[in-house]
Length: 168
Image (cartoon, rainbow, N blue to C red; front, side, top):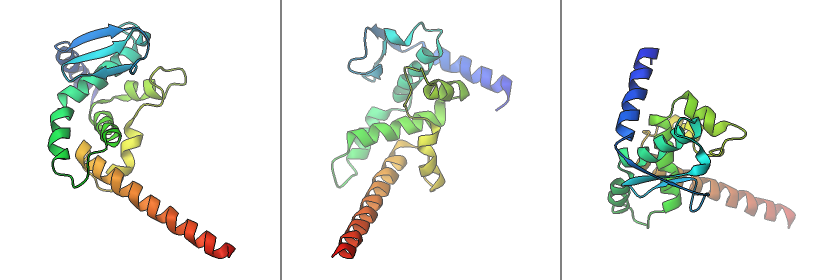
């Protein structure tokens, strides 16, 4: 993406994000930032709206609304044979946001050693699923994550059994 396109995209994102109500709150309970899919809630600890931490968290929470994660979660859950794992869904949705919405400044903010957002989901978290052929959408990443976790657990179980047999 060239510089002019990146600037236009950032300006459009800011305009669309401005249409979503922001509620500021003190502290980090229940999280530093979250959404109820109508409004975005951002901790005062993120700083002023001009700060990169604020902009990244704001973009992230707006992303859940823009990408319609709540109605998609409900529709996707109805197709599953087992109950949807909400924690895995949130990580998959965060991967989708990182893949489609984050720019280099967002990624750097999340990776920063003193960032309030440190440890958040970035494109790096989505990359293994994408490399495995997944489409960069929450439903696909969720399915890959569960399958990958199940295959890893199966491999670990087999290794544990082999180790126990070797000790006998």
